[in-house]
Length: 53
Image 1 (cartoon, rainbow, N blue to C red):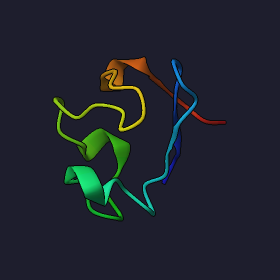
Image 2 (cartoon, rainbow, N blue to C red):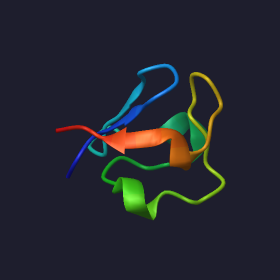
Image 3 (cartoon, rainbow, N blue to C red):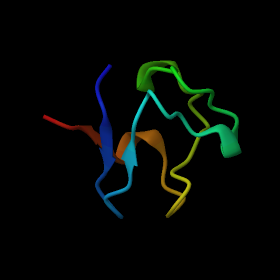
Image 4 (cartoon, helix red, strand yellow):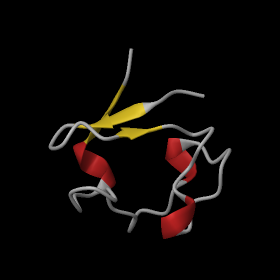
């Protein structure tokens, strides 16, 4: 699964780790995260993330 980087603060969403503190279980693909989820570091929405190459 691909990792995604927040363009605002550079936090990396790693699907293998997820974001369990905010209700996203490990193994959750970025596309499957709820649309109202926000970056745990800076609070921006999913639309501010870009796929890591």
